Length: 203
Image (tube, rainbow, N blue to C red; front, side, top):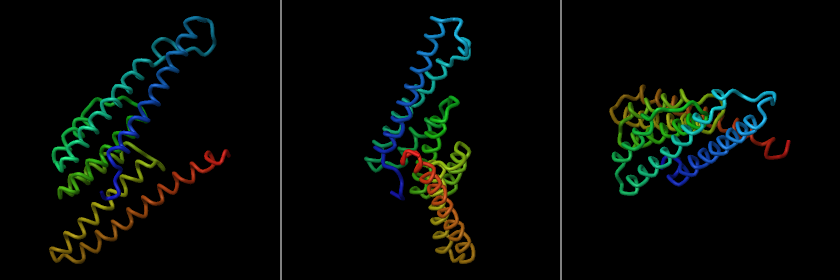
């Protein structure tokens, strides 16, 4: 499993993002209703700025993402890793609304694609997926840490291949890079934990 999230965990993540988007959409609709009933209320956004269509696009995207990840799960359960690539590639090709939840789902999808390609021996393709995912998430987030972890596993596999080919110096460099990436992943996840602790403690 290379430390990856299970299909069920991924569906829970997308479901949580979808629930959040629904809540935001309902809040936006409720706010718009208040403004319509009290047109003089200060701070009410314009009709163009209320954003309900954007919320609908986010919800539709996340719903499609959940279905496509589930399709990929079904392929993996049939030991068809190559077949699992198809639904995930369809997902990253969808028009992506501008939303944090969408960026996180796309980053995680890129990590899953990278893991699948790694299992199929396509190290270069896996590396491209990781780099595309990293562009979606900045700072100390679980998703960035997970992508760095996957990149470390790619470099570990690259090191093994180089060692088998008798290219000891290059293998050592790849192992060193792998260790650095895994340590960076740990630092990112530690940052996530430390940021969450005050909220969990009521501070």
